[in-house]
Amino acid sequence: MAALRKKKTDTTFSLTSMSKGGRAAVARSRSIDHQLDEERERREKEVQTLILGSPGAGKSTFLKQLRLQFGDGFPAAERQGYRDQILQNVATGLVHLIEHMERIGLKFQTPEIQKLATEFKKKHPRISIATLIKKFKEADEKAEKICPATTKAELTKRLSSLDIYKPDVPSEEDMHTLWADPAIQMCFERRHKFETDTLSTSSEFFLLHIGRICSSDYLPSVQDILHIRWPTLGVQEHQFIMDYRLYRMIDVAGQRSLRKKWIHFFDEVAAVIFFVSLAEFDEALEEDPSVMAMQDSLQAFHDVSYNQFLDKTDIILFLNKKDIFSNKLKKTSIKTCFPDYKGPELIDTSLQFVQEKFKLNKPPSKQMYTHVCCAIDVQQMKEVVSAVVECVVDINVKRLKHL
Ligand SMILES: Nc1nc2c(ncn2[C@@H]2O[C@H](COP(=O)(O)OP(=O)(O)O)[C@@H](O)[C@H]2O)c(=O)[nH]1
Ligand SMILES: [Mg+2]
Image 1 (spheres, protein in one colour):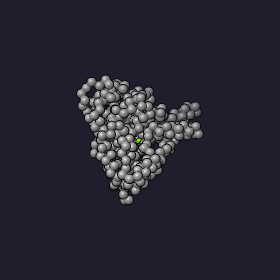
Image 2 (image 1 turned 120 degrees about the vertical axis):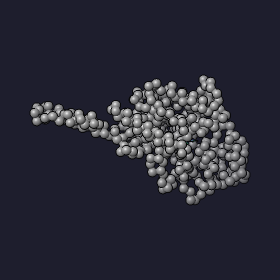
Image 3 (image 1 turned 90 degrees about the vertical axis):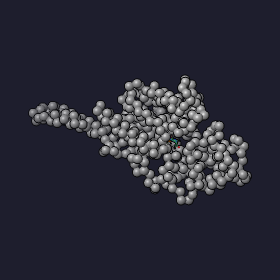
Image 4 (image 1 turned 180 degrees about the vertical axis):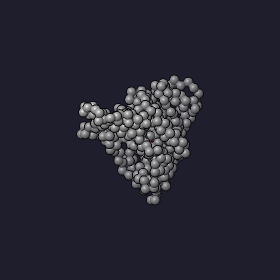
């Protein structure tokens, strides 16, 4: 900034001694200088960070942690607004159990409750990411036809408004009745023995708190909000101001079919935060079951870090869901995803191997900062979020030197 200001004063030599054409040229140059100054000032004041990664990797949860520390921390009035999403998540957990009971032939205690369960399942089907993605893609293509987005701002607006997930709010009374049944209780007790289609940690959490949640004076807690699973397929943003700078954290939809849109967000980006769910090492992609989810994340990470528009952009890699990763490794080897793994069946060595894989999928010269974490853990994330914000600030200082 100082250098640029100096340059500006240098051009204020005697205008009166110049020809008309010369004066016009200086005026033009001043106006360009002025525009550059303004642009530079805007860039200095505004720091954009893109948050990329597959659906379910923990991007929204990270944004919530950021809000907890650098925002208003979810005041009561706002927490109330999460109630319907939480009730929906409880319903998803119940339907998961009902489906498991059907598979193993376990019946509810009375025909009335059995009927209620069948109707409940029909009314509140479990969210399939694959179906949502299909619906989102269709809505996006339709919107594009009616009104093509020509600027990033338009695209952001359009993608954020494609709200395609609007399920019915389940009845608390129905959920109480289903949950009180001894058969569903038995099924829940045996949840750790489910061979396939295991209950997610968020479903487990909400079912364990069903009594509190389904009460008339229920007010969601911060922990409840952090456990919400609510697929966001559009663009979400969280802004905060620090040291007179506006930090914009932009969460862009992560599913494969929409990745080509990421590129619209690449200009003016100071840093990229790339989220990977460590829990996906033994999972296949819902969109394409022939592909292992973590291999797909590696490919996406490779494409981002080698993208020409991001060649000067540093990457912050988040290896998230360490808790689920550690649990899964007790039963399943990392070889499920990486047959070339030769190390011992230990958490630390398996984790190092995954880290190494990501390191090998970026240009050697590109700076990468890695965090291994559990995004729902408020205590642990305090340090991580501060470190990330500090890192983004540093990256921006470095970036400004090269502008
Ligand atoms: N157990 C566990 N669950 C997590 C972790 N991070 C996020 N989640 C949960 O995973 C689900 C998906 O997270 P979300 O932030 O919505 O993913 P996004 O699609 O990338 O935005 C939510 O239910 C979160 O509560 C984690 O580290 N451990
Ligand atoms: Mg999200």
